[in-house]
Length: 194
Image 1 (cartoon, one colour):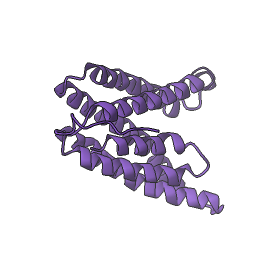
Image 2 (cartoon, one colour):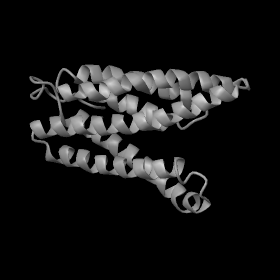
Image 3 (tube, helix red, strand yellow):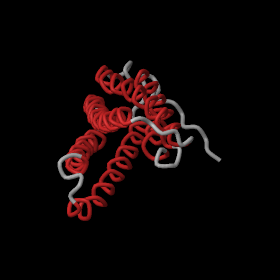
């Protein structure tokens, strides 16, 4: 249906990308998420909105790949390009927040329609986590970026909150994979595992 691919793409884009070559790995995750959302759109039209944002994330991911390759080969970028890089970084953070909120809203809608209260409530809870993290991240990268008190006291909690909502979203998407299936597949026999 698409939730399995969304889980895989989300895992790649947000957890596996925390490595040295995360810029390339993240792009692969964005591509997989976009493909999964195209498939999920057939079951819930609200998945159209995060799909459009994922297309924007793909474009941002391509630009980030160019910057990442320049960093890896030690190519020095001009000052004007570094300003563009800052704009792209902020745009990516903003797009990630919007993507997650729209994805969770879509999951909440389909879970509500299918009368799956656990998934619906988890989507609402995760939206609150994402919004709270977005406020903390905005403060840490915007008006309080050079404030050492903010960095010392809120830097680690902001990162922990980021990891928490990523993991909670992965658990939610996996539970959607387990409990939401296309019409007609409800009575399929489970595959035997070894």
